[in-house]
Image 1 (tube, rainbow, N blue to C red):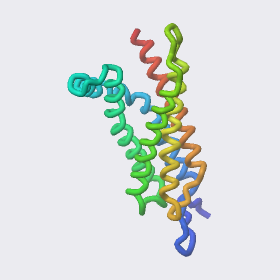
Image 2 (tube, rainbow, N blue to C red):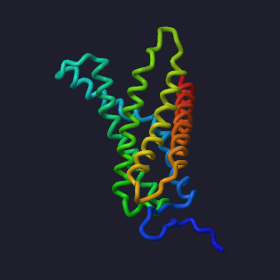
Image 3 (cartoon, rainbow, N blue to C red):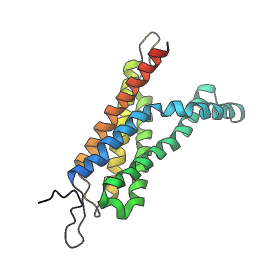
Length: 200
């Protein structure tokens, strides 16, 4: 008897699903990769954000700090959406059950990361500001863990919701995405900090 890793299609047009192996392969390595690179997103966006900040302070009358925050968010958001869409598209390699609705699946993943970026931004604003002389590393670690976890969890949650009645997306797919995104985000932060120490 051969081990079937294919989709488990039930009779009479009921919702389809895939094996646990396929769901975990579509979750853990992909969201771990995304979570690892997600902390680097502000660094990629910094140069174009600085140019947009100059325009906003010169022509829109914004103050420097507000203009830079707005510019960084405006540049980072498309990059984050692209990241979510790429992960969602790659998931279709493993998940045969979602391939008939690949467009819906990718849009749901991209929409989920927009929600994750918004929730993470609101959560970081709610944190008390670091006082002079305090080490902000604890705050940074919390933000990176939160962003990585939200990235995987909300994208997977919206994907699960979008497939209702079509594909049975298991709850452990969402949980695995949350854990993988958060843990890998912490790994990416640790690598970035070690690189900065080496440059000193």
